Length: 188
Image (cartoon, rainbow, N blue to C red; front, side, top):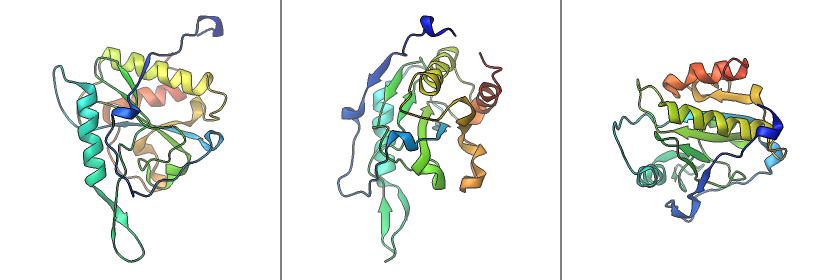
């Protein structure tokens, strides 16, 4: 892609629409500390048309009610909201769901350095053509057109690949081969 032909992806700001919980532990970082872009699927199979924002609200409520760990006194630590920064719907719609500076809990010991991009995709489900096109546009934007974020093409990983950070999952499912090809510059 030539720089002259670049067009920023259409991103809908949905941050103000997401449920959040007060009192949840939150941490922020400077954008210059982001060195990983971690791609996820939500592992929910929902064929057909759906409202992407309503789906995200449900996921945010789930993340708020989930016990993510325990503090030193043994009390449960609950989530503060949706744990992804961007979400890509099956129709290709891209939603901005959390500030990039916010450390979300989506990649275990890599959270402090990771920006989370999630696709609406179930286990065993293939991504749609529109979803793949939007994912690639978002990755290109983050890797090549955001000088404030140092993570580049070589820093794009599927959640399951981050075993050195304590991750053990099937996520991002069928997206993984695309991400591996992206890092090798074969998905152009």
